[in-house]
Length: 432
Image (cartoon, rainbow, N blue to C red):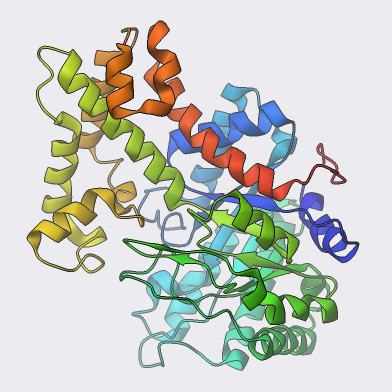
């Protein structure tokens, strides 16, 4: 299955660039949409979990890597998506969740996490040890970062071999600002300098070789860089191909590699296609998918308030608000301004920190009540026109809320698919 990743550099080098979308979400409906989309296209799907989201201690989802893998494969089986189309990845795997600890303690935790990912069959591992731990600078130098990445690569290889899994493919490097979107209005983002990208590649190659890990470095398929794209709470910085050309030229001297672009949410098909053309072949998306999910649920919340006599007003939105106020850890330091501004951001920020709260029992109950109340009802056309115009074609039939949610997430994924797959397809769709 990892062969689909191995082809990316050759396709770019041969002048027929293709890409792959990295779906970074643990929400079951997003996963279901991605797996159903893969089934219908007959093409591979890459699903990734992050170090904070899923780790050997459970992460904020409460899932270990084995739990997450089991969830994805269960949904794939339910959707009839062949197991051979599903590729799992781990994002920012390193000491980040434990950076408050001394370096050795944090790296020990990172090692246990990486072993859990590799042992659970995650075939794509992003090695990210760039952050400082207790008593260290916030961002580490390239040599220290590379040495820690090599240490984790060895752990991943050992765990994969012990589990009888395929040897993992690696991604190195990191990006600024941190994943998940910036916290302020953005004026612009400067792409990674060509010199910095070349230095990252060269130092990692040297360190891996000195550690006897030439084979592991041969499985490094991508480098995370900043192509000049980002989204904040309020706005999006679109990709400027001309500005990124000096960075894109680095791949001419590293023909075995492509770039991985993070925070490509909200870019639109044209910008995403330009990224793929320029060698940013792995496009990561997450908050946009859960933003669309939240957008749809809130529209249904408004429809239910108008259509169902006993529903009340904005029941779901109010449940989310109550839970976010009661447990502010996931949003408080990211959303500034006065109380009115914070309230607006809690629900509508492009960084979509609502995504952390869908697993809360009170919110799960509110979603269940909303879906149950609307399931099988025929929603009048004027209500669709008022609250969700792109679903107005559903006015003639009984509503299936889950199908609508999946449809709207799939529409977002289809844009990525269009950008990643030019008309003259050369990548093999079915890769065992």
